Length: 248
Picture 1 (cartoon, one colour):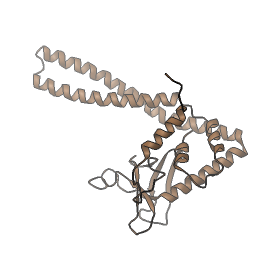
Picture 2: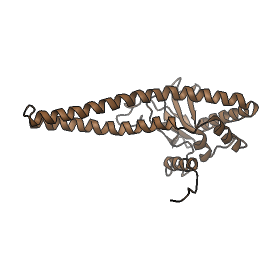
Picture 3: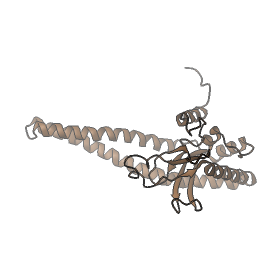
Picture 4: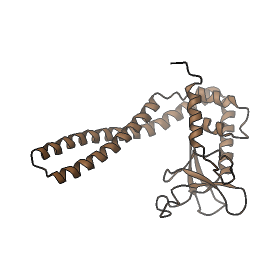
């Protein structure tokens, strides 16, 4: 084996950016910087970029689940939002964070650490509970599969019924194995997380300003952005809640 050419963090960032790239993402052949970062706050579906139909070059994002047939079944509304509005919000937020971190490093580190604990506690507790339940069910399925095999061998369970139950249990077992692997990866990721206030500050200090956000900058700082529906659907003059989750 050879020593790695780049560090793991740089490699992971490159993979994240590559996975988010879509060809001709906004209808003009231009890269959409927020692709892969925006999600619907109600259904969890990805939000995809498109251009408006009024002839103006305005990039907007809408929930991908809304348009799936029958329209409005998986998600009741589009959650439409302008790309410029999200980029402005992210820029303003990062600018405020940078100013805060430079004015009082000690307090900023303390605030970030408290935020980390709060976010991880809520999310990881939910995943741990689901992991325990999935593992318990997987154990139950193994016993059930053994039981129906034994009952079939002893003539207590007809072949047709045995085959139906065996297929049903096997299908559930396969789905659980995938889910358990994903949950274990998530739990391990939290427990071995290298995210820290110090690393986030170093990233903040890396850039002089946040007036123009590049694709690399967005993926370095942002984990995901949740978009809620407007307070008054269809209205341009209304509020819309946006949740930004940073990589720390």
